[in-house]
Amino acid sequence: MKIKILIASLAITSISNAQSLTQINEPTIGQSSTMYLCDSNAVNLASVIGNTAVWDYSQLGKYTSQLRTINIVDPATTTNASSFTNSTIAFQIQNFISTYSSSTSSDRNSQGFVFKEPSLGDVIAEYTSNNEVLMTYPFAFGNTSTDNFSGNLSFNFNGIAQNPSCTGTVISSIDGKGSLKVGNTTIPNVIRYKIEDRTTASIMFLGDIEFTRIQFEYYDLANSNLPIFIHANAKVQNVGSTTPLIDRSIVLSSFEPTSVVSANVGLTSNKTNNFNIYPNPTKGELTINGEFNSDAQIRVIDQTGREIISALSLSNGSKIDLSSINKGLYTVEITNNGVKSTKNIVVE
Image (cartoon, rainbow, N blue to C red):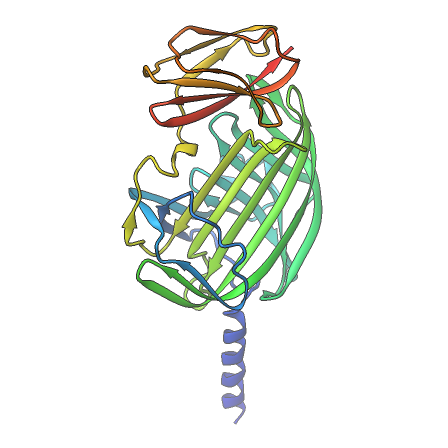
C-alpha cells in the first residue's frame, strides 16, 4: 500500500512540474536545440493569454535553410567568462542574446546578458550591484515576479569604449497555458513564459538610453525543459523617444513551418549595408563611403522621428551638409538594394 501511495504521489508531482518552471526542470549544461529561423515580422500574440490559450502560428513562414541553435553552456567556457564568475549557466540564443544566471530552490536570477549588435559589437550588461530575478519557484500559470536590478554596461560606440552604470526593472510571468500551433503541428499542454525588462543608462554622445527586451518562451515541459518556440524583441532608444536606435527581433521554432518567406522579408532589420560615415562627431559636413546602387537613398532623422534631410541619390564619397541643423544625436538611414541600415551620428 505504501508503495502505491508513493507512486501516486510521484505521478502527481510529475504532472505538477509539467505545468510549472522549477529548479528541478531547469535546462542543464550541455543541452542544445536546433530551431527553424522564422519570419521576424511575425506578431508576438501578446494579447493571447489565459488558461485555455491557443497560440496560432500555423501560417508562420520560415527562412529557407536558416537554422539557429539554443545552447546551455558553462559560463566559464564563454568569451565573457570574467564578467560572470557567479553564474552557473549561460542560455545562448545564437546570434542574438546570451543570458547568464544561477538559481536556488526558490528563484532563478540573472547576473546579466551579452547582446550581439552589429553596430555596437557585444553589449555586455553586468548586474554586479543587484542581480535580476527572472522568476520565483515554482513558477506556474498566473504567477508574476517583479524586481529591480543594477550594474554596468560595456560596449563601443564610434570606437570609444563605454562603461556606464545602469539600473533596470523586470516583470516576468507565466501568462498563459494551452495549445501552440506551428504549421500542421499542434502541441498541447504548453505554458508561456514572458519576460519584459528595461535597462537604462546615460551614455556619452547618446544621452539617456533604454534597452528593452520582450521575450516569450513556450514550454512543453512533459517532453523538454528547453523552450520549443521563442519570440524575442530587443530595442535600444533614447528615453522619451519613439524612434529606436536599434530594433531587432528573432522568432525560432522547434517545429517546422509549412510556408516559406522571402529571404529579404523580415531579415532586413538584421542585414546591414557596408558603409562608413565620417567625421563622427561632426561640426557640419558628413562624408559617406560605400558601394551603392543608383537608387540608393539617405535620410537624416532626429530623435522625435522627424526627417531632417533626405537625398534620392547616393554614391561613394557623397557629402551631406549638416551645418544648418541643431546640435544633438541623429540617425542616418540608408536604403540600398532593398535593405535599410542605420548609424548614429552626433552633431556638435
